[in-house]
Length: 521
Image (cartoon, rainbow, N blue to C red; front, side, top):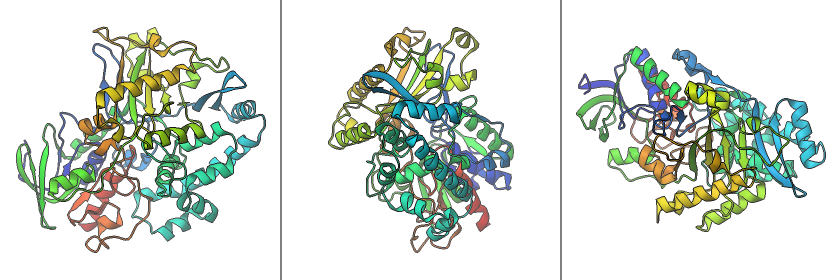
């Protein structure tokens, strides 16, 4: 039960962004209550023993960290760290009937050689260096803006200070830039994948949703690196919950919020335990959920487009490409059926209402970089985790029969992986205490049911470019609007992924919502 009847701030949802907001506000002396529907905090950023009787703590939903600013870790005194991966990616291929692949990592000389062996010249590697040199400069300039008030479009363009790059990434479909820059189909596909994580779009989609997704995937930390959370994702949210509690915030779990009423100056939040008053309400839930709680018309439907699979193996499988060690290939992002043409074919098939014939996906092995997520006995025996993220699996494909469709897509996805293995993956799967294979899969509809992600959309809605758009009259000029967390009610703020500059495990919307509250006093 909440300890008080009224608070300076009530935060709806105990995911990582809500916990960030709670910690900042409580440290500033505000009375803060966090209400969480589930029996634990963390939202999608949790570590779970997913398989009965098996001592392996998997990052069940979100699994890598890029967008979390060091500023938040330092400000809140978090006992949390990440570890860099030595390999960026490996993409298997067949050229001239021979299994081969592209390994990106292990130093410039080794990567250059890998490009040359795959493509027959230095051209693609030179283009790769030039392309990612540009995105790194972009990251260095844009990432620091994410924890400040929203810049205007013109202001962000001035910060980027590269008209050609701005035009290519902010104004034209990304496919045009990819096709102008690279000629090899596989290399083009590896580049494009960062634009399609959880985003159902083609390379030339005129909405530019693929551009926005790409932007957030290449600016994290000012480098674009995607790092492994030591101890799993739950280590971050456990540290955030501890920081919020130490600062004085109350956290109540097993307490679903059922309604929010506000007159713009004060609010009442109704939950399973009763009703509490609040000067401000910060909502760490999707805009769809906010509308439901307010009794308002819902926003346009959001749709996720991914298959999430967790596995535990007794050992890594051998590869058909004998030129690469599986421990290297799986430690970075292992791309499957993600050539440029394959990605477009899969998109068109899913858009037409069918599961992709060759489902694209990417895999990585957390335990190679951070074995602490496995019990000591499993480590000694050589067990490894695998996380798979499938692309172009929109929620609409699962509505008729979610379970059967999920099982069909999982089978097809693993079969696609098996084409690059020297042995079936099934033979490497561990078994739980009940003798069942250690594998679990989640469709977009599963993620909606379990986490409240609308249509399974991991970003809560389409990502937005990180600059201010024209605001509605009620919000324009207010602190929430300046920080990108405004709703149609002045004292109700979005602090989740649906805020401007939301998405990914970042804490940025939570930080920005807290800054907006503190700015207004």
